[in-house]
Amino acid sequence: MLAAAEDRFERVEVASACHLVAEAIEREILSGRLRPGDGVGTEAALCRQFGVNRSTVREAIRMLEQGGLVQRGGDRRLYASLPRYSGLSSRVSRALILHEVTFRELWATARVLEIAAAEQAAENADAAAIDALEENQARAEQALDDPARLAELDSQFHSLMSKASRNRVLDLAREPAGLLFFPTTEMICRRVPKGAARMVAAHRHLIEALKARDAAAAALWMARHVADWRKGFERAGRDLDEPVERVFARHALRAPY
Amino acid sequence: MLAAAEDRFERVEVASACHLVAEAIEREILSGRLRPGDGVGTEAALCRQFGVNRSTVREAIRMLEQGGLVQRGGDRRLYASLPRYSGLSSRVSRALILHEVTFRELWATARVLEIAAAEQAAENADAAAIDALEENQARAEQALDDPARLAELDSQFHSLMSKASRNRVLDLAREPAGLLFFPTTEMICRRVPKGAARMVAAHRHLIEALKARDAAAAALWMARHVADWRKGFERAGRDLDEPVERVFARHALRAPY
DNA sequence: ATATCCGGCTTGTCCGACAAACTATGGGTG
DNA sequence: CACCCATAGTTTGTCGGACAAGCCGGATAT
Image 1 (cartoon, rainbow over the protein chains, first blue to last red):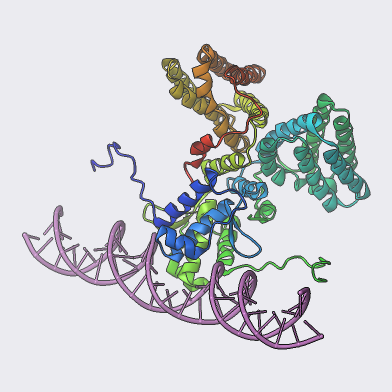
Image 2 (cartoon, protein in one colour):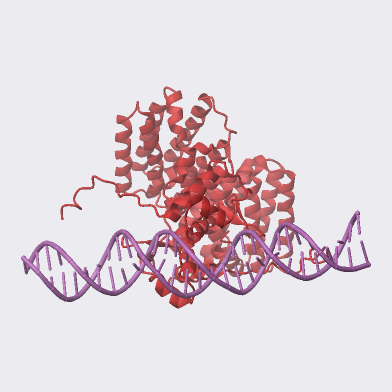
């Protein structure tokens, strides 16, 4: 009865062996002593070094693997590695689904991130990035009556735009929302007749803005593009306050590193 | 010689038993058949159900645990759970550090996210959220000459602001950048005399804007606040194109779920 | 009725083992 | 001398069993 009343002490941190091993290796990587691409050593070697059993080492490895800090190479050996963005993004998307966020939250966030990506892309895009966008655009123009393909190309367009900004922080912040946001494009294109044409037109204007290095124009067209999405979503009879459905989980399930 | 030339086939996805087990449990949670808080069962029970060894089950559990999908309760039993934002954010921050992103990228991204958070907070903040910000502000006013404390309070202020927006997607997108961005406040307060006062003043204006439900004012003051940070950063003699240092890893290392 | 003890269950770790895949090494062959 | 193949060794993925420590519930003693 009285013990619970006071909380003078923090909970004691009892670390299990496998966590200690994982943290030791993690520190080695974060500190730069193990660089991405370096071999971490065999399980047997790690057992010897840490003085623990192979099962324990393997549990530690599974944890690090999941965090993207180590990876099995083609030869199944263990290498330190850079966490891949795609893995992180799908993980975040998964969390958003489980938390049942609404399309309104998603839209409000995607809006500012996409606009920022367009602005910064206009400032920083190089020729290769613009070429990639042009190629995407050419394909989209061939697929005006194929909603599924169009949705995929739209998603890719925004991803390319984000990469074109050459801002990796922005790119990583944008991707989880994009992963959940753009799959709905397919539904909208199916339900709203003029949706596809408006989409492709907006993309065209965005590419032109990038070529002209006109950040204001890029922001403007992206704002319109995203506003269009919202209108289409509502015209399709959907409610912005619906939670993002579990259906989209399949998009987030892919690529667990 | 000839096998490598053609890549007609995708690489065959050879899934190890522990991955299959992890995926099966993950599906169960994502589909909603296992709800957060539900017990997953004992390791022995999972062994029986999947027909695999306990070591294999444990490796699967380690993976899920790391993803935040399951958690050990106080009784050490296994429960399905919602991935915590803090765990995801620190993971993303860690990735940003390893990718050696620059402060310029960080700043450009934090800028749009913080402004959006302020705007949406002005629209959606409830009384409790504003109270929390007021309390933070009161503490900051008491700590004007304690840079470390002030930096912590600043970081907390922005986190509270983001929560006040009641947009969980935005909150989650913002946090990783914030985690890396705000620790530099301490350095700036030390090096730039008037920094602390300007910071507290900006926070005051932001709180007033929230009370007045004035999104434009909130955006404006946040823009100034973030611009101030950048000026302070440069006055402190730092270069925006420096990569975020590994030093900040300690902030990202915490709370691995 | 309360306090205490005991036995069972569960987890964390350890040990030893084995099949499959891969590597390397050495020998045979043209 | 160069090249190909077989064999042995290494490494991983999985298995079965084992045990100490912690937690829980029930039985027992006061």
